[in-house]
Length: 210
Image (cartoon, rainbow, N blue to C red; front, side, top):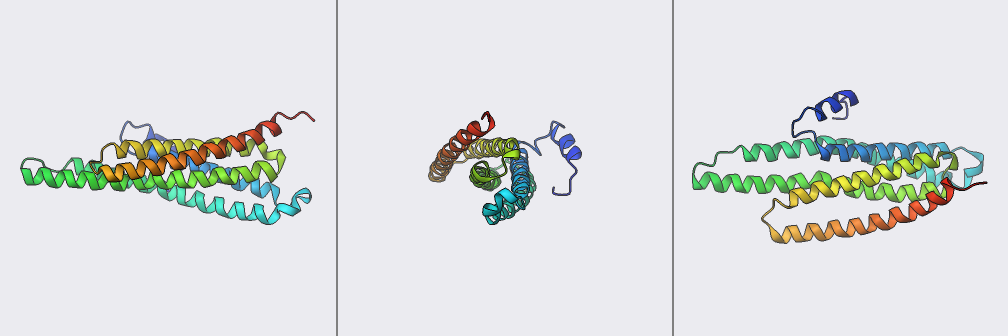
């Protein structure tokens, strides 16, 4: 997936087949957000007025780069995970034994399919935190780029949540469903608080008239 040209990916996405789908796009949004965060951090490093935050910006750039690479890997993992779901549904169901085996495989496949979007959510939450540092202490000339990074991270997170929930709804394991829902709600609350803080700073800087 990392080597797949963007134009080819978009063609595959438009083809009317189940994969790639929203899960891969959510991971791509996280990768794009991370790339913009790298850009803004690197536009801050080396500037005379920002020497006091040089070390912090270098750390942000490294972490964002790591999240970018993991997000690209998650794009491929999401495709493979959903492919296993499709394969499970194609299993024979003519006898009670076959139906039981098929049902068990479907359950296992949906559990596995939740992992990539959960990774996207956690990565996106971290990206929101990096955006907060950028809008507060990064190069103000790139404030609009930081804003785009913020909203891409939010899109990635929301997309990840949607994909976890739709997989969760197919599980019979009620205890696991409750545990994952609680985890998701906690991550969403943290993301909401982070986004609101960053937007407040963004608004004051983007619309500030000297």
